[in-house]
Image (cartoon, rainbow, N blue to C red; front, top):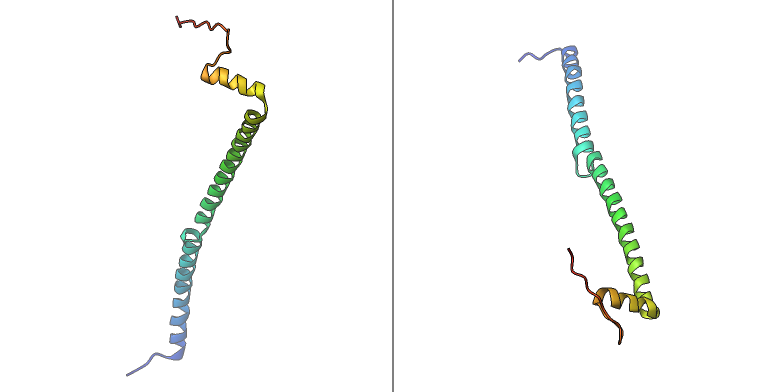
Length: 103
């Protein structure tokens, strides 16, 4: 068997190196972009985190409003009377209630 000269082997090896390098770079970039911990997934996670943070703020403000209403219902008799009159249609003894039918 005849083998190729050493210079031809080196030349063939040099020519194949850029191809392997390109393949490795492409695989690495695709993993970096589209992988489980890639840039696109990281961007989705950041957007989801911002959305959840906004929802948490909204729920916190709604929660504080409800706590203040609970406090008013427990300690403010005039507010309690106002709520009973508006939501439950309660009246005091001796009051007349006028009801108008819609046109």
